[in-house]
Amino acid sequence: MEWKIMRKGNSQTEVLIKIEKQQASDMETVEFYAQLDWVDDCSYIVTYDSSRHALTEEQKQVNDSGGMLVVMQGKEGDCIEYVSYMELNGEEISSDGILCKDK
Image 1 (cartoon, one colour):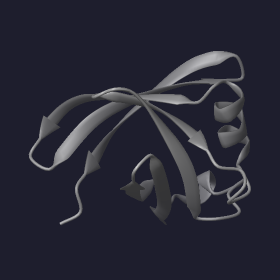
Image 2: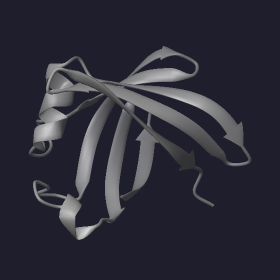
Image 3: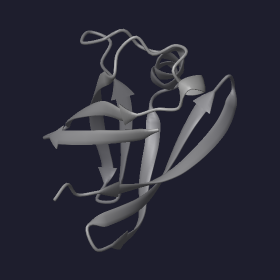
């Protein structure tokens, strides 16, 4: 998946711009709203705003488990590598990715 992420203060909007067909099964919208709670300068917890859109099953589970922890790992140019941690179905999973500043 490829997302465009926009932040203002402690709010984040995620807009889906590219998706593989098999990943689209439970997505009713391509724009999601999240709240960021900063832990420190390099990590924050994401929870999804159910008042602004229908949550996917994964987003409901993320919220029910207290949110998704995102830890920034390193910076190269206008990009930051990160690892996110969340609990799904009682199991902790992690996912890594890259956030790049829009030019």
